[in-house]
Structures are given as structure tokens and as C-alpha cells.
Length: 70
Image (cartoon, rainbow, N blue to C red; front, side, top):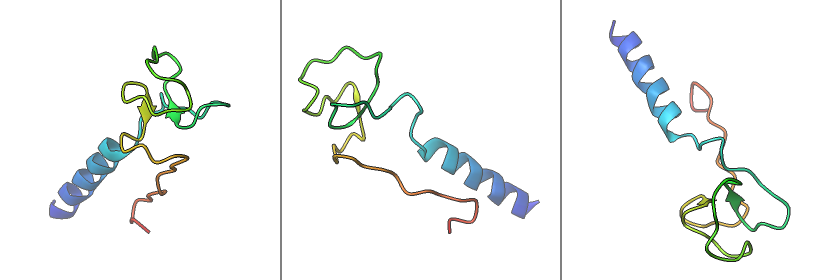
């Protein structure tokens, strides 16, 4: 039972930490962006409302996480 609880907690943590699929890489945009969002800055600059990651690292790709974290 303890192992099942630990595995469930790990799966929930991984699911909550993965980025949303609404942010995509578009040609001409400096950051991954939500295409449905109304931008308030030029597409070459970071828009906190529309772009991801929030820290603003250009061309950021999160590391792949497997079930075992390897």
C-alpha cells in the first residue's frame, strides 16, 4: 500500500510539473507562445501573459522525465 501511495504521489507531481500543451514554437517568435493570446509586446520580446517559460529563457526545452526520473 505504501509503494502504491508513493507511486501515485510521484505521478501526480510529474503531471503537475509538465508544461501545458498550449505553448508552441512559432516561426519569428523568440519564446514558446500561446497562439490564442493577445500580445502586448513585440513577438521578439518576452510577454509574461503569453510566453513560456515564465523565467524567459530563449529556446528553453524542459528535460524529459521518465517514470524513474532517469
